[in-house]
Image (cartoon, rainbow, N blue to C red; front, side, top):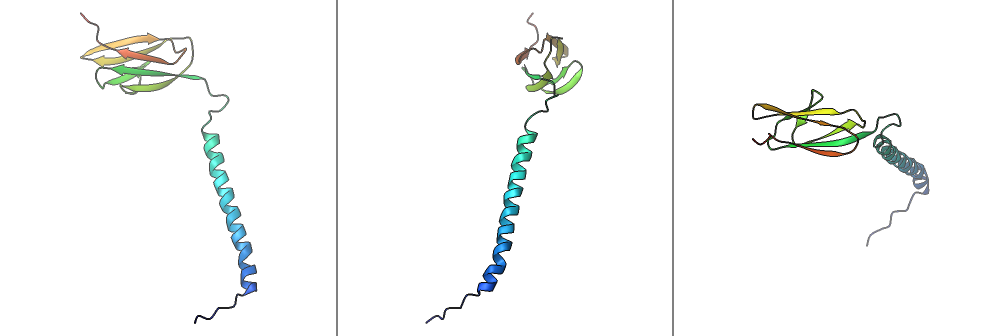
Length: 116
C-alpha cells in the first residue's frame, strides 16, 4: 500500500505567481517576435516603388544593369519603377548583348546572341 503525501498549501500558493509571471513573459516574447516579423516585412512608406525584371540567357553569365553587376542569369532584380530606360547587358560568346528596358512594370528580358 502506498501512503499519500499530504499537499503543502503554502508551497502551492508560493509557486503559482511564478508560473503566472513565466507564462506572461512567454506570451509577451511571442507577441514581440510576431510584431517584429510583421513590421520588417513591409517596406517603409518613403521607399520607392519597384518593379521586378527577370533576366534570362542561354548560359549562366554575369548580368549588369546600368553598368552594375546584379548576379548571374537567370536573375530576378528589383529596380525602381520609372520612365527612364535602364540598360541590361550580358557577355555571351565574347560579345556584349544589351537591351534597353523601361522599368514601368514587371518584365522578363531574354538576352540572346543575334542570329546571323
